[in-house]
Structures are given as structure tokens and as C-alpha cells.
Length: 329
Image 1: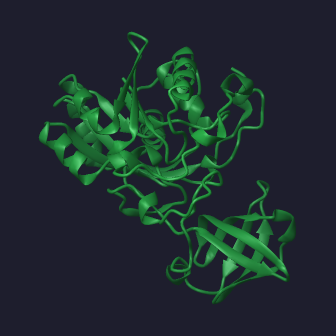
Image 2 (image 1 turned 90 degrees about the vertical axis):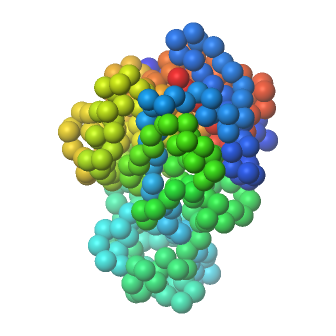
């Protein structure tokens, strides 16, 4: 398939600027792959589609305050932490990039950072002069560039976020409240967690028309033996493994191929793709030409996703990180 196959025109006013309140009041589009049908619901009604044999898998990564602003001379430089290289040394996105060269010193409020190198991807390696734990007390929520409103870091977390390390939220999980999770448990549905730290791949556009030539950035993940046991149990009794978010899909399908419960995945999922573990998916509405749109197209079927996105635009759904949700059955 070609990159242009995954393009679509979205009215700018449909890009959600603030999250729904309460979280589970967002809209929910339900896709039935077997019938090719579409339903329009409210997110809290997702419980009606869950059965006692099912296993819901969440990503418990926690977003770090990764966004900073520095001065270099008279220029303001935006610095976005991506990945820790070693103590006090981080791989970062900087904007404008042409202003920051190896050897340059960036001055923040209360600390400085020296640019050590420029990577082949255009990111910078910065050494900060304060320890990592103190550095993160200065940062802001690393909101996506299409969100222009101020949103707190806590609202950009899932209610079950535990393990620090992500630079973007696993946004499918933002729709869940503690009360909804409790109701799902009371219904007899098992819930388990994996960890995948969302990284730079979320922000990198696909630039090759032949999508197979695109190289996705690796993200670290970990799957517990308890989660693997629950997956086996659910499958054995005819239940479904329901992934909350594309990050969960990538972690589980990486394990299905490599057998590794911990490490880094650069698994790029696009049509056609054989899913070996995941049976159903909760996700948001994704950017045109993005790897995430390609993943959901592989899962639901390209034609159904094209029709669903056309329907979502017609029905004025809210798109992207703070937007509405989709359940693919």
C-alpha cells in the first residue's frame, strides 16, 4: 500500500483541544468487523460490549514532564526529552533545530545543558548539569503540537499510569475512569497491564510513498508473566484479548513474534498483517498518513476504516489525542 492511501482531509475544528469531562463522556464509535457495521455510542457504554471471559489489557506507562524552553543568545529553543541515554544525558528534539549545534550551551531557568552531538535523525544529545530527578521537576506536559490549549500533566495521564517513561500518553486509555474500571471488573472481565513507553515514533511522520520502506523508532516494553498467564487463560475459555491502545497491540504482537517479554520493539504494523494475540481494540482517531492509522487499518480492514473515518467527520467526532474513541470488535 502507498502512503497516499492513508491520507484524508480533516476540518481543523474537529481536532480536540481539551479532553472530555468526565473522561468517559467522550463518544464511542463501535466497528463490527464481521458485519462491517458501525454504531455510535458514549464511551462509558463500552461495558455493554465486554464479556466475563474477556481480558482487557492496559498500558500503565506514565508521561514524564518532557517539555522545556531554553535560551541561546536571544533565541528561544523548545527542548523535548525523548529518551534517556545515560545519567543526565538525553536524546532530545529541539526547535528550531538549526539553532543548536554540537558544543552549544543552552540556558534554562535554574540549569544549563550542553549539546554533545546531532543524530542521523536530527535529534540532539544534551548533557544537563542537574540530576534527572531534579530536571523533571522543571518540565511541562509534552502535549502534541496540534493541541494549543494548556492542559495539566495529570490530565494528560491515564488514571492507571504508574511507570515513568513515556513522552506522550497512550491516549486510548484517557477515556477510562476509576469508576468505569471498577464496573468492568464487577462484570467479571479480567484486567491486566503491560508497559510500553511511548516515544519518538509517535511524532515522526511517514515520508516514504512506499510505506514498507519506513523505519519506525523503537520503544521499550515489558510484559509480566502474570499478563501472559491471563492471556492464555482467556484464550483457553473462548474469551477475547482486548487491547486498550495501539501501544498494547505493538507490545503483545512483538512478543508473539520474538518471544521476548522485555526489550525494545520497532514492529511496524500495516496491511496486511496477521494478528496473533489481539482480538479487539480500543483506539482513538489518528492523524492522516500516520503509522497508527496504518495499524488500525490492518486490524479493522482498510475499507472499513476509510468508511468509519468518513462517518466520524460527517458526525462531527473529535479527533486525535483528546478526541473521541473507537472500539473495533
